[in-house]
Image 1 (cartoon, helix red, strand yellow):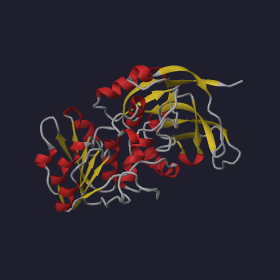
Image 2 (cartoon, helix red, strand yellow; image 1 turned 180 degrees about the vertical axis):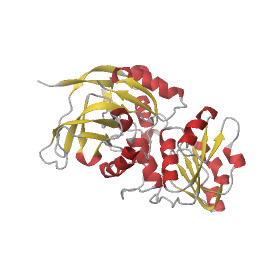
Image 3 (tube, one colour; image 1 turned 180 degrees about the horizontal axis):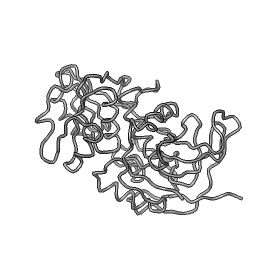
Image 4 (tube, one colour; image 1 turned 120 degrees about the vertical axis):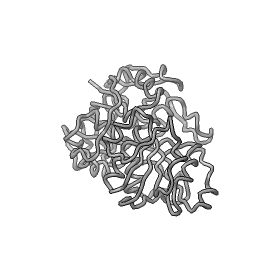
Length: 338
């Protein structure tokens, strides 16, 4: 008899209303994996991109999926089963993970559930100093900021450009972070400060106190001032919003500077960047238990803090997606699992 669990599934692409809280089969435990009883789930943009069917990608890039689909990559919980060939983890360990990304882009990560099976190489012991909701809110956004700014951590071919992405030295440099109050942005700000950079944070006016508390040296309210009109000679721009408008930041950079768009789709300023002597580089975040183990020390010590915008019960995933769709999040959205 198949054991079941509660999960949030969808049977078609669409808006938040396609998300259904219902019974689903428990995940099997395969060699090399651990099975985690999920205590919390972190939400990320790929969740709603997949929910809608990756509409913003060209048809040939849209992944083929099979329904029913369970969204989600980021979890924190307790190991309840360990495959025979797995060493270093035991039943009862509290762990966190970004599950199978980008290999699970088409729905193979399956985190919006009471249980999830995870390759042991993608799991790390949860930071003891934070709860499961804060731990689950960290992996994708923090790994993205880490792999862009500190250490790529792998040699997989970059799917977004021919060259390997190379982080740049940050100590003593000036870094502008656009979208600084969001998931990736609030971590990029903190990592840059930790590395000794001076940080200009761009966000909405009501986020100023929050961003200064995280270490921002200067704040620009984009609802009143366009950063590209007033900023010059910075060493690095991390555009956590990205998209077609990211090229406007080229003029803020000094020759030899770099622009890192987190979402590079639509960027068309390569020729201008070359004329200005600016490097534009991006990468695809990848699961890494080893990097999460490194980051656990920073999270436990409070060197890097996780901001939670809001929490919802797993059964209320639809409302969580509606919150995400309204935008202007302060950090991350999390689901809690009873």
